Amino acid sequence: MKDCTAGVVTPQHDVARHVDLLVGVVPIVNLEWIQKLIRDTSERGHSREAVMDSVVRSMDDYINYITPQFSRTHINFQRVPTVDTSNPFAAKGIPSLDESLW
Image 1 (cartoon, helix red, strand yellow):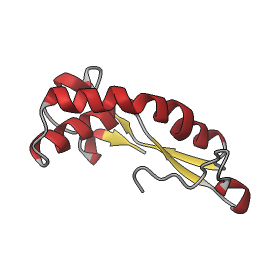
Image 2: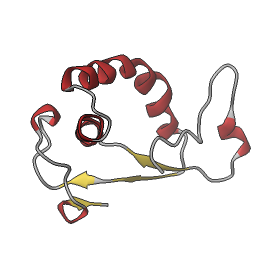
Image 3: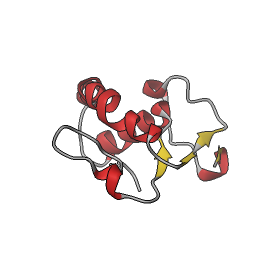
C-alpha cells in the first residue's frame, strides 16, 4: 500500500469524492527516507547524493499532493519506529516490524 494516492484531489482529478471510505497509511518521513536511501543505493545502484537530491526534489509533491490526502481519509494507520530514526541519512538499516508500533 506504499505511495497510495487514492484520495488525490487536483484540478484535473477528484478521486476522493467517489469513495465511501478512504483508508490511509500515513508515512513517517524519516522512515520513508531511510527505506528509500537503502533501497536506491543497494538495489538500484544510485549514489547517496543522488538519492538525497531526489528526496529534495520530491518535497513539493509530498507537501502539495501526498500529505493533504491524509486529511481526507476516514481512517489512518501509521507505522511508528521504536528505535532512533532521527537522522535518516546516517541510518545503517531499516527498523524491523518488531522495532515498530502500528
